[in-house]
Image (tube, rainbow, N blue to C red):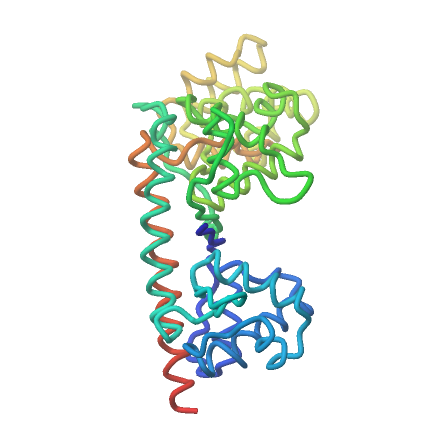
Length: 356
């Protein structure tokens, strides 16, 4: 069954080195671990010494072992991965599986992978769309997420005895992680919580709600951000609360003069700064009062004020779209960009091989 771990990496710009181009392709398709080592070298040898040299020969495991010097166990392990991601296919000839590079070239094979990946990802994202609750307020504030490189698993639905399709979905999209410590239940519950929320939610709130450690919640949320499904956004509604706490704390510790100078109140217009300083001096200021007085202050100036008072902009996490279709479009656009890069590098690899 088709399964591809798609990872967005910087393009090997200008390189015509076949080793560099092949390594980039294998890494971008999740076929080697980032640690590299023997696994990276073994898979490279299978591709370079067999499938790229004679793509349509029909390699069986014995021939691959003779060609590369790898054990039957190693050959089997890597061939399974190459078949799953769609680069290699096999024909049964008696007791042997004869493996070929699809289409007879890296460009053709990657083009077929691209087509399959787009169709399967669209199918899986349609499942995600069904559980995203539409919201008119979720996207009211622009996200401030860094341009996180895409990392998503694209797997077609497999057989299951469970009616819990969300758990299957988070596993097949790579959101649950890998290995024995994979957090399928946590990823499912986090996705549900974020899909029905109309506002960003902090990690602390999520960890309390799900009775999980903040570290585990953060790990799963990071996977969702890498997949393009979740994004980080500032929680501007929390600014008045944090500004109020900062003003009271700094007034008690450093006084009124510090608040007006280094504390940042002097940056605001006179009427706003005087109202705030009078309120904190007389003890009449509260969070609602801060909110009213900051209403006319630009958001960037509110952030600067919060920073100078020793606070930090509060951030939360949300589903990256007002509805399911918006989320799907966003993820598909990013995946398509990465898949097109794969095709471009595959073309450069084939050209380099033909010239070599």
